[in-house]
Length: 237
Image (tube, rainbow, N blue to C red; front, top):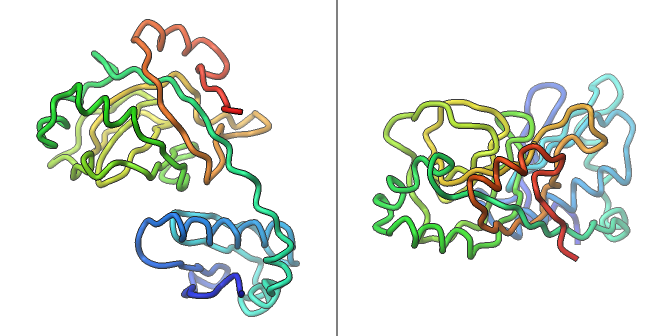
């Protein structure tokens, strides 16, 4: 079966094109994107500069003096897909404080969802989330897997800047923030992890496709872990 079965190709200027798998956030689309990204990485065709995965699509950036869309697509034959072994996604446990100043918007979000703040915490902590993509800012991780009961629209107007490492919720998604900024999402928690380290071997802690389970911690624990290198995150066996 072709790696691009069911995909739609769209040009994006003279040096890039997009491979789309559907128009919704769907685990099957994410797996298809991961397979194509892994195949490109394994083949490393001449002229390929970078591939950028999202929830349902892949941006392919290339040197137009060295290759073109047709040549790159031709490199993705069925043998390449069969021989490309996808790495097993990692599973992570990440502490989150969901109280006091770390969860400034949890009451407003709970009101909008017709839940109590405690019910919102319980439902959120019960979920398993997948890193769907990085975007907006380096290390800013978008997460899928939010329960339908927690699907709240964005705020009517942006709220003041929130701290880095915040867990935010809106539009049926969650995100881990790597920068402080105003946002239309609801701030429901805070982690102690640094989400972007430009000088590290791994600039971001999680790979696209990894899963995250959150576990509760206190504000005091969050402050303590913020002084550690890893923020308390641990990889599950």
